[in-house]
Image (cartoon, rainbow, N blue to C red; front, side, top):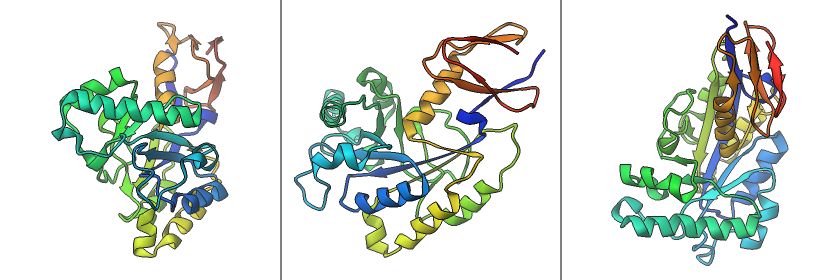
Length: 266
């Protein structure tokens, strides 16, 4: 029987994604750095707080974050584990509706405000159209998320960023998939006067042939696409029912593309 491994787009085995909260005006500088080095990520916004000052202009959203993902952070950033579930649903769906009107695209991700969550909230989110939700803290790991509704990043940018980046660059075993996920708030670079940290990280990480640079939802969609592939019982062929191409490695050979809607003999 063929041994099949899933791959990231382009046959890559490593992925890098970023996640930044609150929509502060420092996002402009951060996005510029990301774009310069081909880094991509997700920006989690509170639709009800744009009048609080030191935030981007809502009209900037479609252009500033072009090429990145816009995701929910709730309307007003409450500590949602203390709130009734109907209020949580309104905070999430209200944020989605407002952000979707601005972006013209489905908004399907969430960063928990104040890192607050509960099992009941996790169970609620799929019915609100949310596919994943990011918690706070650092895992110090490059493992793929086991629970997409408790998705913990590899590190905050103030926690071992360059050290972990070097470790990630050194990973070479193609029998594994690796993910480096960095989170934070762009205003923290002003607070600590350490913009050079993110500049150095992006310069070091950008432009690598073995890394897929993705948003949070693109990563999750890739995993969902792979789960929908339909393999023959003996792995002799595969049908891709998705609207996107998928990539797999067969018997440790170079990755092959499985075109959307097609069957490929392996």
